[in-house]
Length: 320
Image 1 (tube, helix red, strand yellow):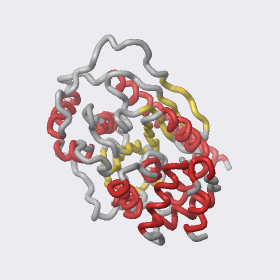
Image 2: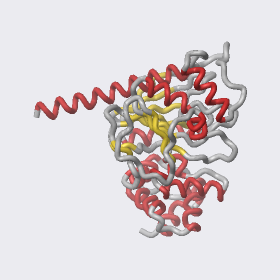
Image 3: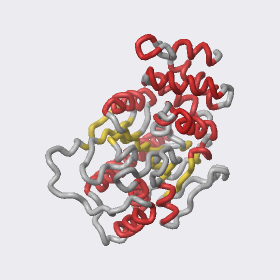
């Protein structure tokens, strides 16, 4: 179906718009990602979905279209922890690299993917460069070798799919986020078992992301992130929900009550200051914020459960 037919349904305003089925949503986004639409049509799609809002079925369909087009990373020996990093630092330092390195130290393969979506913010990519860690370039092909256990790997969005990066970049023209900004926090760019660390900024996204993870049978940990990053707020532990087998379990209630203490954080949010802070934490010179310790524990537990799924599947296959 031509995109114009879909626009007639979704571009009728918040009250008059009609929702798409999962299959229709997959077809629509497939056309957008494949470059079959004009800039005007893509702008209309972005604004229409912004006004209407995405349903869980539509998000699931968009993910269907995206996953068959992504340049997937090969499966690793252990479940890959996927950290989408797109918002960067605004008032607090971006600690996604710290969480990733903590998990890598525990022997897990870790993937951070992202691209700058906000002008003037410090990104995970910049912090990782300051730490002297290799960062995948957008024009390099995705490696054929899996992420090793205990290794952190950064991949820019453009390397995963140029069309997705172009859709993210529409924000620079229109000035508002679009569907792509939701998809990058839901997608799994690994061709094998992975745990996606999803994050939301507003309570309504908790509902839509929960329903989408359930519909797609995702393995994920969902929390209210720090300024849009998939890392627990170092000042106050947020709620965390674990998704396995299409089921959701509350694994960490939100911290309530007034704050009695504040963690030691760098006074600046630039890449150099953040990198120095991360080095000091990893060296044991500064304590790890309690909320990050709890998040890392829940991720480790979830990855062990995913590994147990694989062991069970292997035993069942042998028995047959």
